[in-house]
Every structure is written in C-alpha cells, then in structure tokens.
Length: 259
Image (tube, one colour):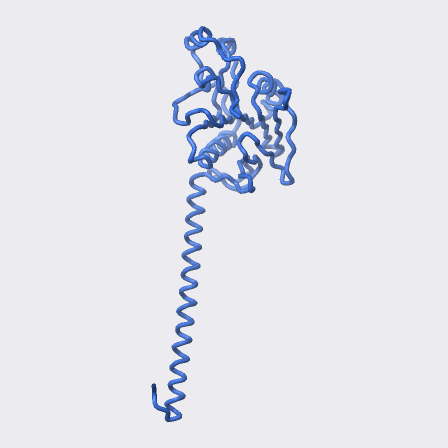
C-alpha cells in the first residue's frame, strides 16, 4: 500500500517551502567506492527488474525533504537507497525527493550501507526518523565489513520490529515482494560481496548487461545443442548409408539382382 505522510502539508507551508533552496547533497562524500557501486547496483538492478513499470522511483544518495523546519535547518536525511513503489512517475525529473511535490508520497523502503562513521547514527537517530517521522514501512541496514544485514518493519502501532532472516540470511521485503541479501561476484570490475535483490524464487535480479549476457549464453547453448543434434543426425544418416552399401555389396557377392 502506498506510503503517504499524515497529515498533508498546508498550501501556505508548501508555498513557503518552494521559496527555500533545497540542497541536493549533504556535502559528505561516500565512504568508499564500494558504497557508491553498491548504491548503483541496487538502484539499476531494481529498475531493470521493473523495466515494464513506470509508476515507481528508486533514489540513490538523494536528499529527502518532508517538512518546512527540516528544509530551513538544512537537516539532511538521505538514504543510501530508497524506493517508492507505486503512485509516482519514474520519468519525472527530480534532484531531491520533496514529499509536497510528490502528492505527499513517502518512502516505502530505505536502505543504509553502514560505515564506521555512520553505523551508530544509522541504527539510532536516523532509524528513529524513518520510524517516527517518515513512517517508512521497511528499513534495512547492511554492514559491508561484517556482512550483517538487518531489517525492520513497522507493526500496527507504527513501531519497528526486526525482520526474520531466511535460511540463507536474506530478508523479505513485503513492500517490494523481493528478497534482499548478499551475493558474491564481480561488479564494476570489482570482485566482492554485494547487497542485491532476489526474486520470490531466489533468483538474483539482474542488471541489463547481465541479462543480455545471460540471453547470449542461452542462445549459444541452444546453438550448440542444435549443432550437436545435427551432428548426431548426420552420424545416424552416415551409419544408415554405410549399412545400405554393406547390404548391397553382400547381395552383389551372392549374385542376387539389385532391386
């Protein structure tokens, strides 16, 4: 169900908000190239998985604004990755997520990729904002050093409750109907362990390039299989032809007329 903030902002507040300059970044660089790459991996793979949809938005390292006080105070809140699933236009140009410009639409999922300098804040004060102010239904934290993935979901009292992990350590997102978990492989020319989406059957949600490579591999396998079958047919035909020759030679040797 789409997440909207309650109560909606009044027109006069929205008018004043539009006079406030909204910075597009908090000015703090990402902790490492891995953080930047994993943000791109999560965003791009989800976009490709939902490539037949246009009613969602995935933000990466983007500021979120939800009140006049927050905007005035430059009180930045910017998930590493967030998802708004349904009720918005993917193609609308936006440099920030300002809820009054989005029909009061809040975030459905927020993800923080932890670092030594942010882990405590992400698990406490920032978590409180997602829970008590933005009422974000699902919140995930992933520590790339320990590979620990944590997740919380709002209960009926709008309090976060820890999610239960599957046997392979993944967490189920009810909002997106996808699993979130770790994957070991190469991305952006870098081998490592990455946080990725998985479909309900446990298959990793591919990037466009990965999907194209998989299709190419499948086509190559089909071509090899067809070539193998053609070789087998040719071999059987050669055997049959050789058998016919043998029988004719046998008949000739016995003096029988050829038919």
